[in-house]
Image 1 (cartoon, rainbow, N blue to C red):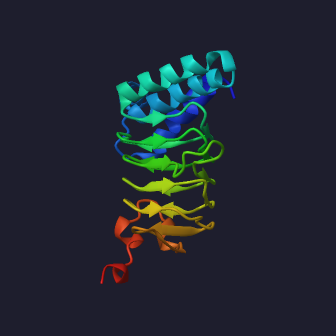
Image 2: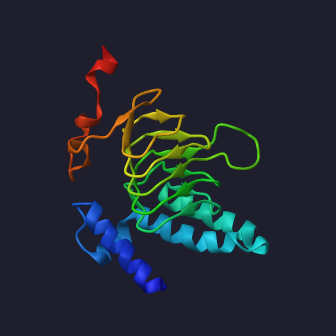
Length: 194
């Protein structure tokens, strides 16, 4: 994809994920999630060249300062990734994110170990992660899954599942939970809180 087509795709993606999106010019100017992903793409290209890794980290930290979103330039992120609101999102160095993934503010894709190598999550395609959720360690979140707000996930989540709670309990995802604009309370199992 060309740079211009990627920018257009990102702006279209913002419109499709946010009912408050008013227009491309305004979104390009004020959406911190877009700014963070655009900066990440540049930093990621720099990271691929060992001589530019230091500069890539400086760019990612500058972006963190400006947007409140920290994406390590070593992470791998697919197309049509959208960060809604964004403040407090952290994506670690060895995280891998598929296509059509949406995360809300306060999400952490982090590690649980000080070991080198793969320490961050791998997310499949078409995944939604609710506000404040923490997905920790070198685990896998399967395609078409969702992570509820404030969930703490430390184990693999199979495809077509939903993970809710602390620690997260994994259940099959229902058709109702896939509808656009679904009420977030459908992700909550009242029996968990009795």
